[in-house]
Length: 253
Image 1 (cartoon, rainbow, N blue to C red):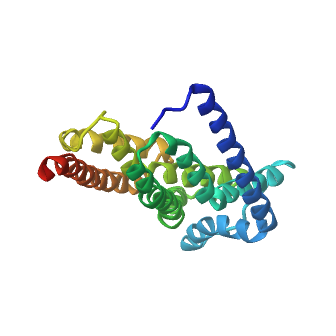
Image 2: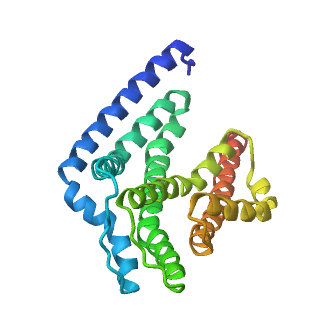
């Protein structure tokens, strides 16, 4: 297969990015039309945490523009999640011309569902576990010393959006590990030898991406460690398949 010139790659990248923006715009429009139920969905982890501590769950607005800007953030996040299957597909299609025929099939039937599933799994994990229990722990820590929380709507939306999106991206770890193996930077053996360092990095990443409390840090670090092990297993599996394919012509001769 002939390689595409640099200018053709740039034109193709521009075309794929244009499609991504169109899909994001459609997702944003859908999210804007559904902003009331989206607002209820986003507020649910906060209400659960406050309810567990028998505290009033009303979010407050401290500035005139906070309500508008925060709802736009919610719509952007919702639009990105709605459009994520199409955006991921376009990004994978961009790298398709540089692959062999067998690799193209893997791209569409293995990598595409894998990337999408991990992205959505990270968002779901963040929504149902990381955020509500993290909020509960932080609120409980304050109420024990007699503090009465009054949570700013804008601050909550910013925290919610960052945790959902960063956790969704962090869950792509196994795919990244496999891709690094396919281009020859690392092998399954390298990953196994680096397991102890990976655990330390997972804890550090959990501390960076989450609020400064040990509960949410561990809630993110533990899945990252498990995903690392999944990445090691899948990398070893793909390497064995590549070795078997390399031996096929010799066995036929």
